[in-house]
Image 1: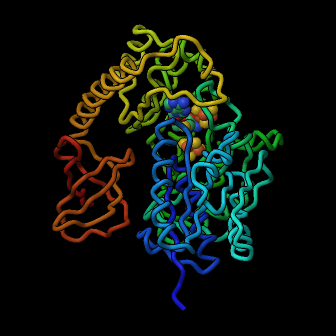
Image 2: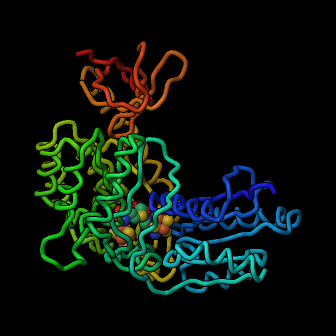
Image 3: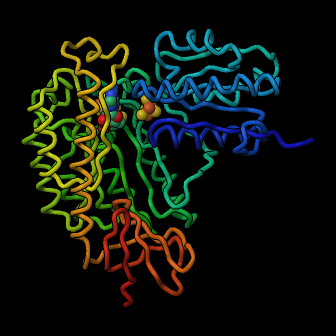
Length: 441
Ligand code: SAH
Ligand code: SF4
Ligand code: F3S
């Protein structure tokens, strides 16, 4: 008998990318193999996101495309899971719009996928099961990793922050931290496999790791300390940090530990105190700048990236100018900029002074223009510097590496080891990448 095939369509953040690796593990437990061809698949899983309306519309269109395939292949199983289904009324909406979906499930019962597929195969009856509340963390053993040198590791789930624009706390539940021992065991095995050179710790607000244990001793720094005792040539990254909990102590710790990446993602969202307050972010721009100053002064070669929302309700031209000025101040090496999108059930949905779409578009274009210039300036400043680079590929007679901040660098050399770190001198900055040479010891 031919092996059955699966295809997973993933949308959204790193958390979802990693959830899809868990989904793949469960499907492989059931004997499925991967395919990229939806016409050849026996099961298609949509792992969805609802962070912005644009994400939802895209996913709806993709699910709609399956109707024709399902007509040709009546045995195809269609599963929809992830953040989108977790919203009130969404499972009913999906069932009505796409009656061909076989299993609708949410984020809190992801681990039930194997059981659900078995149930469907036994009954051939479509069903929906979305749990309203999160449950205790169930450790999963068979994760099928798809990224090459980087391994994602959840350290916590959920979010307690309720930023007024954000749907995540409603679809991912409250903060739950994984046990230090479980995380350490997973990282130890990943490093021992010698396949992974960076370990990226995942959580919606990693800086509040361990606080839910209420034991008075476990926190994010103690976790980092534990993980960096592991032997091996690897770097620890983490995302996402929240400026309200990102402490001076953590900055000093990052500076002191060469296993921790110096590329820091610190979402600011807006450069205006009035908007930050209305977003319920619990920090001021003055405090954020203090954090940035300390990062640059204490951590040589540090790079900072951020997330920004433009067009939040009530954002004036002056507020937006403050955000543009902040970009210049922080010298971000990357900005993930988003146009504010109304999310059902969040407080900001009801805020007055929603910003017209044409103004939002103008602002995001301006933001990217400013950022583009900053990136060019930073790249030019890198010329002559020595940095550590992970060699990820060889294309023709060039090796392709990545800097810690994720910039691509081309290196002409004879025999380098793909998957290893090297010290590199940067010789040239092109529009998108760098050119460098290995520093031979
Ligand atoms: N927990 C992380 C990431 C959350 S989602 C954090 O706090 O930074 C990733 C980004 O999506 C956010 O940082 C924010 O910039 C953006 N985002 C969230 N909700 C949004 C909305 N309703 N409209 C536009 N962008 C949004
Ligand atoms: Fe959303 Fe704010 Fe939580 Fe991030 S910290 S997931 S932006 S509510
Ligand atoms: Fe991530 Fe989207 Fe959910 S950004 S947490 S997949 S809503």
